[in-house]
Amino acid sequence: MAAQRHSSQLSLRIGRQDLDRVRKAALVSGETVARFLREAARERCRAVEERQSENVGASRAESPDQLDRVERLVLASVTSSASLGSIAGVARAAGVSWSAARHALKTLCSRGTVRTRVSEQGQRRGVREDSVWELAVASPGFEQLLAQTKGVGLPPPSPKRLHAGHLPSEFWSLFWNHPDPSSLRLPDDEAYVANRLLNGPSARAALWASVHMSTDALRDCLPLRSTQPRARALIENALAHRCTAPQ
Image (cartoon, rainbow, N blue to C red):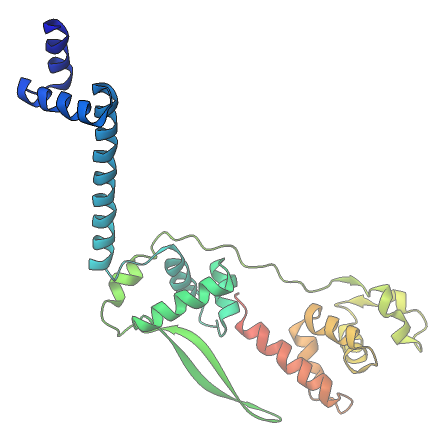
């Protein structure tokens, strides 16, 4: 018995009086000494973990200028492009969801790191206001926040979806007076094709042209007398979207 008590003292590295108190506490709880010590160790570990979590939270609260991962991505995307005018454009450039980009932009705006700049663009049908996200370089702590974007990897930009090759067969019927619509090719015949698709009776064809035809082809249709108001509005919207899309 004495040898067993001595062995327990050596393994636990506690004095005889402390060991006696442990034995009495285990006896009161109805547990063996080993089980009592295991449970006590678990409780101690949980208490340590809780204190560590509280310390991490306090450290985060004491360092409000520390950006999280999404905020760094969003700030890096605004830094790398001067033409992001929508939350969707920022989300695409940063590779995050729309809601995550919205929350990050709201946080960065509240810190004064980014802001929106509104400018007026003259159009044939009036004046349009365009807004883009830009850096507020004069804000307090800007350099410290910008330094956190160093080494942040942004996703590669989406490839252009311009069509090259034969005109899709689903649109051949719109060129009923052409001797061979299957011979039409893009971009060689884009001026003729764009005018017919955008001003024809098919809304699907007009939408396809606004997405898959070149910017020059769309712009060339604007001054034409044959361009209808609905086609003009579609072209202007498509061109405005391309200006705000990440390059």
